[in-house]
Length: 143
Image 1: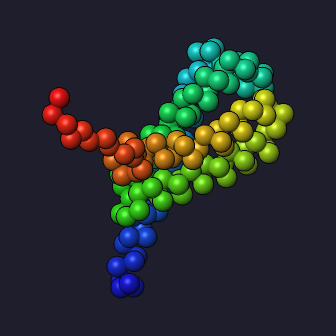
Image 2: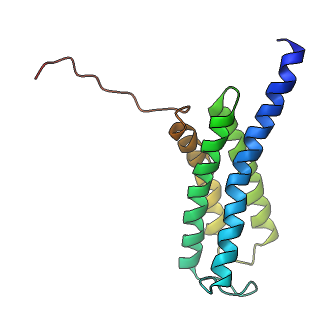
Image 3: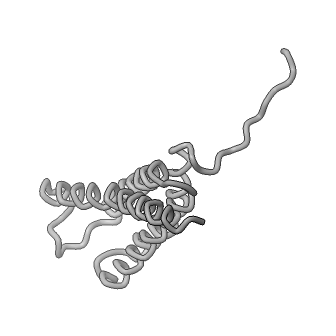
């Protein structure tokens, strides 16, 4: 490997993962803010209902797929690995959030996000056309 070529690729790798993180985090914070401001979510110290946690998990899952998609598209090589690195960052963030805010909601909420991160990462990479895909069945008969 040429040492001078690893620098730009490393930079593009970091940028790809960072971009995916931004695609996930910024809209999640914005959506949370809008839902709190419009009264869909209660004021911050008040605990949300399980139904509202399901809503939050649903859009976070979609944003996780979108973030992995962006990461895979921007990755200079190994797009699935880059999407999984993004997923690892997500696992770390969810785990830290779960520990820091353990009394703020049901334990199933952060655990469900942690469990869904890898499938979301793989789906995002697959949607980018750079991930694992299902085998194609080819018919050889002329019906």
